[in-house]
Image 1 (cartoon, helix red, strand yellow):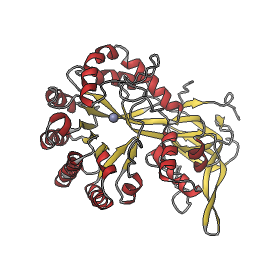
Image 2: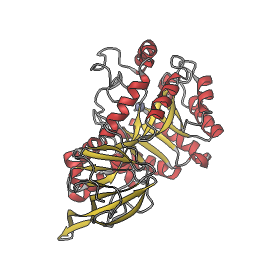
Image 3: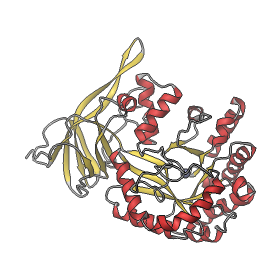
Image 4: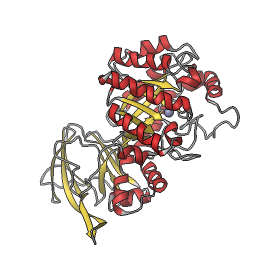
Length: 420
Ligand SMILES: [Zn+2]
């Protein structure tokens, strides 16, 4: 990957394809209209968007008609403990409970920490190759890792700061009390670079719902952070934990909009009535769900949650690590997976499904008005080999270019053209 630092420069991308509206037949969306534009970038922001024309003296790059989409965002990943970059290794066949895995981590973390800076950087490059320029990454906080996992992650992120951004979740992977991690969490929660206080299955790991959640909430309030806890528990304790955290967000409005439950598998096992009730409470408390879009023995009700206006975020979670091997790092693949799981196959539905990759922006609103990109936006977008969002989602199209705040991170085309 050839990183070209254009951050403070003025330049134009010519022949950029943007979506401009939907095509209709018999009142139904049957296609997506696009046109070619020239986009001028200055100081990392979009300065001008105009119908395609020569840049007229400004340095120019030819996008060759590739489609621009908002840069992808991976909202649940563990950059600190991938095995990517090391020789291929599938997950260990035995001892797969979370408590077994904690024991295993206590053995392997000292060895993994020796290469964690380089491996995190490699994984970030993998994500960038698929058009992702932002991640919410969890990092281990446990007595074996100490502050090392955070320090190494910060070093890796510093090395790529011109091309990638992240928000950080302090994750007590070995439990708050199951191993003695509260003092360490207290210390790390105060670090400026930490954005969220994490957690892990309070009942099954620490033996109580209230005690670990209360500590998590207090750490978030005391340090002005958000919350993002892992909750795999599918039964009664999972349901109770979801509602307990909702109660806490309702009691503390400063937590609303910045409190998330990752996985929340319990939602996948609820009756439609219980799910509707819980979704309404999540929406009212502004507690979001972060999901890796799983589908083994249940389907996460992500469309139902979205319909109830719950914030739903998606991410790869594990990318080839000792917990799971299937994360590819490709957010477009997640959008494609969501489309297949939830039955989205029309032009309109597939175009909306791009949400699962961008975790926010779409080029067109539901009525087909172009709402992205706009002058003044951060110049973070990708170029994909597709005619429209729907095609990109359906075919998991190849990403040919990526810009991060005006810096060209990835560029597959032939050498830049100078139009002057
Ligand atoms: Zn995770």
